[in-house]
Length: 372
Image (cartoon, rainbow, N blue to C red):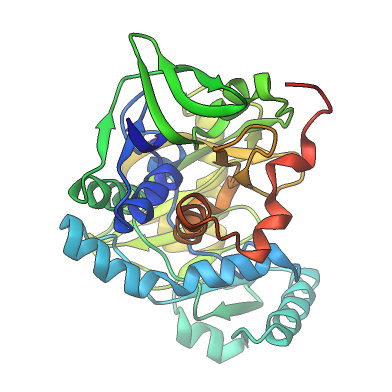
């Protein structure tokens, strides 16, 4: 009998486990595959709280709060797990090739500054002083000094290993078949071989979440958006800052590597990497940084981002069933939002404290009206 069972050992489930065990909870984590083999292992690791979100509101605020947690979190996770999450604090540069794109960057700069965030528009000499190897056709760049990056698989594993160091139990290669409910309350899960019991159950299993929650009136679609990526090695890195254009992003990593991503293929469940996908990424990347052409191909891969209909994650309690919680659908922002999701979920489960912003991410917003 555990305090909490978490279904899913990606970055979200592992973060929830970490914050729960930091408060002394006994936790069982069940993963149908191996940890960080899904979206968490495939992500580029950008903390794009400004680059990815361009509208004021709860989602923007949530992203800013989560991004602020990373410097302290990097130290705590390294001390607990021995894993360096690879936090690089050199910002992000959104670039424009056309006049229209330059105008968009000017609008974004005004917006971010109105929200109290740093955003600096660079052009001409200032732009090429910042990144000398940018393509000559680039007209401007919006520098976001606080949008940093991490090594995504390392973050997921650091959360997980920190949780197990705190006493959490991990079961891998174990698929959950259903949730056990008695007297209107979730009290465990049934796996293929046996059942496990707890006071609370959290479903953080990405695109598998609807399958488990549909019997309880959760009618929300969480679908995969396949993304292909490629990493290249260099004798000397041509850039120091993460570069984001309309067709791709380029993330400089330790070991003189660049990660270039990502294609966008909604409802594509396949795991193969296509020649067309990688060709399109390299073509766009060389427009932004021509020296990409000199890189040696290291690795190609694909992952599935979990997307929701309205683009917002589901984070909170399933109201129709006591002690049943959900955290999924973070799409491109799972790495960024993992700390705040884990912290808020732990506070809700253990202390019954619900952060006011969580009302906007309720699992109920797409729940069908049925008796369960």
